Amino acid sequence: MEIITSIQEMKDYVKYLNENEQNISFIPTMGNLHKGHISLIDESKKILSKKIASIFVNPLQFNDKKDLDTYPSNTEEDIQILKENNIDCLFMPNEDILSDLDYKIYLPDGFGTYLCGRYREGHFEGVYKIVNKLLDLVRPNFTYFGKKDYQQILLVKYILQKNPEKFKKINLVECKTIRETNGLALSSRNSLLTEGQKNIASEIFQCLIDYKNIDENIALKKEFKDKIDGRLQEKGIEMEYFEVFNVTELHTLHNISFSSSDHKIVFIAARIFGIRLIDNIEIE
Ligand code: PAF
Image (cartoon, rainbow, N blue to C red):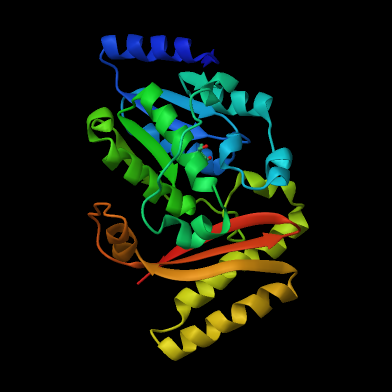
């Protein structure tokens, strides 16, 4: 596996692949890799292509300094995992990647009013800048993102549509959330929790499942929603949001084209022992 840290070397590597007419699959990450990331890599194996993964903990997307300072990192093990999974190239950009990112971003209208956009000021502006920069450098044929970060996927779709010329060959592959056996969605932040705390945190997923299992009864669903805050508090979990959206509504709100059938998604964000976790589940 090649490990590249300089932007120029990355450009040269991509140029070389293009000259040799190789398809490129790109898996951007912030490291501390887990089975969720491996599932993105597995998905990329379905296509004959050179596999490029990136690891960069992007400071621009952390609205909370403490979250950035404590963000788990495990580079040696990550490199091992990527090698074992036959990644061809790991891009670990140095700080130069941030050098021309000091410009104003306009997110889609209303993006800052719901889900993480509402609670993490500046987060999606930071994601926009780094994703746009990485995709511009790598210009992959396929790029892989996990559905746990659903609003991030919406943003990536928006970035691709906003730059049709530059990004026309990029296919975004949306990958399903991978879970622990107790249901807890895998996240790099889980490694900041003990096994016991992770078991308690599985209550977050349980709330989604229990909501999904209520029959289509608006009054019952409302009653359930009103009680979630208290239910989580009893376990020492602090709820940030619990919201239900129709996916067509989310896409049309931002003029993002959408092809699959309409359904609802329930979204949750909560803090447990100071660690912020998010999850979602498709219903109906
Ligand atoms: O989902 C992530 O890990 C990050 O937001 C990403 C897409 C790598 C950008 O920093």
